[in-house]
Length: 110
Image 1 (cartoon, rainbow, N blue to C red):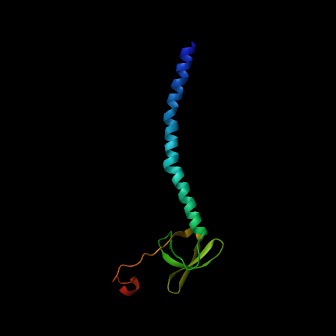
Image 2 (cartoon, rainbow, N blue to C red; image 1 turned 90 degrees about the vertical axis):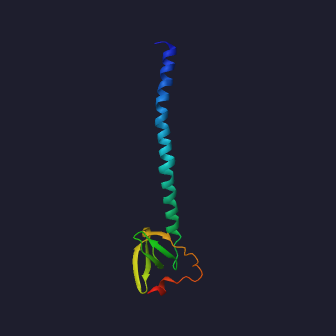
Image 3 (cartoon, rainbow, N blue to C red; image 1 turned 120 degrees about the horizontal axis):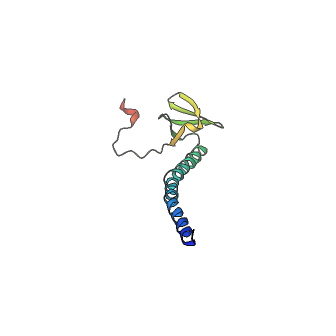
């Protein structure tokens, strides 16, 4: 084998691996990196919970945090109804927006 064919062969091999490297890089940028950011944001949110905050649980229930333990949260989901859930069950902190002028509060609709 001459030196030229060996050089051409190695350039062709490198060229055939470039699409695989590009696909792996694209997968990392589009899937792995955003998922790790989301996971860090949720962990930060769950670490910063405080009593009195209105939260949404992963089950879709909204409630107010009444007390916190190491890995548990006591949430009041209705007047006089408290449930104890895992801290990981808190999906989001509800930030209520100011109601529009003349809007009827939800509690008064009944």
